[in-house]
Amino acid sequence: MQMQVSTASRSVIPRVVRLQTSAAVRATPTKASPSNRGLRVSCAANDARANNRTGTAQASQFGRRGLFTKVTGAVFTTSIIGMGVTGRPQSVAAYSSKIDSVLEKPDYPPAWPFKATDFSRYDESTDDGFYESPRFVTHIDGPAIDALTKYYAKVFPESGNDDVAILDLCSSWISHFPVGYTAGRISGIGMNEKELAKNDVLTDYEVRDLNVDATLPYPDATFDVITNAVSVDYLTRPLEMFKEMQRVLKPGGVAIMSFSNRCFPTKAISIWTSTGDPDHVWIVGSYYHYTPGFTKPQGIDISPNPGKYVGGRYKGPSDPMYIVTAKKA
Image 1 (tube, rainbow, N blue to C red):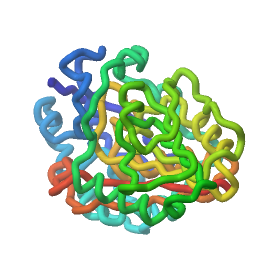
Image 2: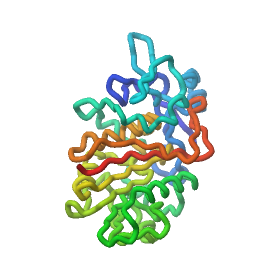
Image 3: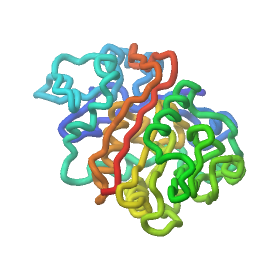
Image 4: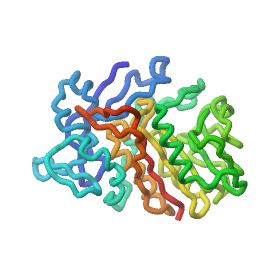
């Protein structure tokens, strides 16, 4: 699959801008086709090989475009959110292991900082066509799945409680819940009925394109837990979706968004494919922050075998795995 690199001048984070080198790594063609429908690749911005092909190899000396920097005159200095680190440009390896600090002091501006174009996608065709054929595959590797399952085991209500209700948002044929976990209700919403029907953990499911209809077909205060595994990067109406999540959660209920650096690049939102992992934590945290009724979000790095960024690309023995979570206040 051919890749192309575009440039951008606007920062994701107000008063904190990224190095003005190359931007998103995106896939062509722009329409879903047999060549890209089932392919999930790294969503890491500033892929070093793509930069070299487009004559911007100098970007690799600074690491990924997701590197947080602040501008003082014409001089770039790094500023790692929540870590109080400033200095010369450095690789993301310097703070990849401290990604869970991003949301300690996120410095969100008073107003929603994103533009409509941030939620555009390379392939703007309807998602029902893209997800028409079932994919009975996993989208992150085994160690990352195990890390997510272990996290769920720690935070889920006790198994076997008939009073517990869980919603798996953007669900599929597998939810990565602990083996044998049961609850009074485990609902799933997803795009492919065959995948949902194969998911043994679900007690009920609904097929719905949340980018077309960003509502949840449940009464207020229905669920104790809402999960979303490696799919938050496809939501084009996140504020509407998070308002609905807050509505259907019980008081004190928890929402758990998990993601890696893998994605279908033609369907992921622009702001995601043009930024790096720390930015993604900040972005998902902002969805909670700008939705009334959630507690302060927390970012957690549960990567099973943390790697490092070399020449702007993630290098590790397994996929990274991140959690951004908050409770209904």
